[in-house]
Amino acid sequence: MTADKKLAAIVLAAGFGTRMRSALPKVLHELAGHPMIVRVLETIGELGAEPTIVVVGHGGNQVEQVIADRFGGRGIRFADQKQPRGTGDAARCGIAMLSADFAGEVLIVCGDMPRVSAATLRRFVAEHRTSGAQLSLITAQVDDAARYGRVIRDRSGTVSAIVEAADATPAQLALREINTGVYLCAADTLRSAIGQLRPVNAQGEYYLTDVIAIANARADRVCAWVAENPAEFGGINSREELAAMESGMRREINRRLMAAGVTMIDPATAYISEEAEIGRDCVIGPNVQILGRCLIGNEVRIEGTAWLREVVIGDRTHLKMGVRAEQCRIGEDCEIGPFANLRAGTELVGHNRIGNFVETKQARIGRGSKASHLSYLGDADIGNDTNVGCGVITVNYDGFDKHRTEIGDRCMIGCDTQLVAPVKVGNDVYVAAGATIVREVPAGALCLSRHPQAVKPGWTEGWRKRHRKDAATDAEKSDRGHRGGNK
Ligand code: UD1
Ligand code: CA
Image 1 (tube, rainbow, N blue to C red):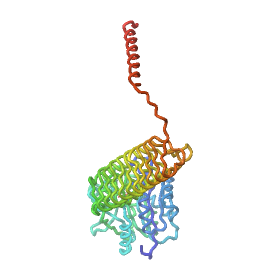
Image 2: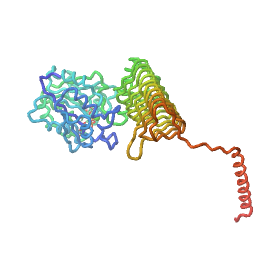
Image 3: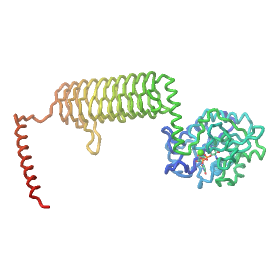
Image 4: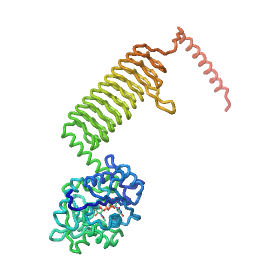
C-alpha cells in the first residue's frame, strides 16, 4: 500500500441477517470452514488498514469473541450499533470510533462479502487515488441483479445514485450494474455526507448508499470502479447463497488442483480446502473431504468416502474406502483402511498397514509395523516391523488418567491381547494370543497368559439330549394348558 495516505477500514457486521433465520450472527456462519467475518478481516489485514473497525450489534459479543480468538488485539476495534437502523447508521457508528483528527481515507466493506480478495481491494485503492475522486465505490455487472442496489448513471456515464431494489422503479430494476457495497472515501467527506442521511425510503433505514447522491449534489467527484470478477463480491444473505458460494469456491479449487496434476473421479463430490496441498498424480475418489491444512504427497490414492482434516500423507500411500484421519502424520507407502479411524496424534512412520476397524490415537507406529484388523491403539509407542494381531487393545484409561503402552521392534502381538498400561514390551517379543499383559515383558521373551484349557470329550451330545428332553416336556405342558385352559 502506498504510504502517502493513511487508510482506515470499517467493516459493517451489525445487521440482523434476517434471511439466514439463525440464532448465530450472520457473519459467523462459515464459508468453507472459516466464519465469513474472519475471511473479510484476513483480507483487510493484508491491506494494512489501521485501524480496522468492526461494527457489531446483533450477537455482538459472540462476534467479538470469535475475532479476538482469531486475531488477538491486533489493530481491530469494535463499534457498537445499538439498533440495526441501516448501513448508513452502521457506518456512522464506525466513523465515531475514529479519532476526530484522522484525515486519511476510509474503506468500507460489508462483513457479508467473504470472497473479496486483497489484490482486488488494493487495485481499487490505487485507482481511487489516481482518479482524484473524493468517493469511489466498486460496482459489478451481473446477470441476475436480484436484491442488490442498482447503479444509476447519468448520460455522461457518471454514477449519480444507488437505488435499493426495494425502492427501484421497474426500469431501474432492469439494470444489470449493481452496488457491491465497497466504498472508499476521504474521512471528512464521509463524515459530513453521513450526517446528511435520512431514513426516507421503503425500508425506513439509513442507507449508506445515499452518500453517492449526496456527494454528487455537492459536486464531489464520484468514481465507480467496475469489478473484473463479480464473483468476489457476492453478498451472503441466506443459507442458499452461502451454499452456492461455497460450491463455486470448491469448483475453483478443484479446477486448480486438476490443472496441477491431481485426478478426481468426480470433482462434484471432492470437498477440498483452499489450504490443502496435494501432489502430482494423486487420485481422489468419490465423496472425499480434505479439510484444513492437509499436505498430501505424490501418487497418493484415496479410494473414496474419506474425511481428512489437517493430515500429512507421504508419497504413494493408499487410503482405502472409508478412512477418517485428523491431525496425524501418515508416512509414505502406507496402506490404510478400509474403515480406519486415525485420531489426533497418530504418527505412522512409513510402510505401515492399518486395516479395517482399527482406531489409533496419540500413537507412534514405527516403520513397517502393521495392525490389520479390529484394534484400539491409544497412547502407544510401537517400534519397527512389529505385527499387532487382530483385536489387540491398549488398555490406556483407568478412569482418571491415560497411560502409555510401549512395544519394541519385530514383535508379534497375538490376537486378542490386552496391554494394560502403563506397560512395556521389549524388542523381539512373542505374545501368545489372548494374553493380558500387566507387567513388563523383557526383550526376546515369549509371553503367555491364559487359562488352562479344559476338554470334556463327548459332552455336546449329552447336553443336546438333555435339552431336547426338557423341550419336549415343556411342549407337553403347554399343550395340556391349551386344552384345559379357562376361557
Ligand atoms: C447492501 C447495499 C446494497 C448492495 C449490497 C451488496 C445498502 C442500503 N444496500 O444491501 O446496495 O448492493 O449491500 O451486498 O447499503 N449492517 C449493519 N447494520 C445495519 C444494517 C446492515 O451493520 O443496520 C451490515 C450487515 O451486517 C451486512 C452489511 O451491513 O454485513 C450489509 O447489510 P445488508 O442488510 O446485508 O444489506 P443489503 O440489503 O445486502
Ligand atoms: Ca448483504
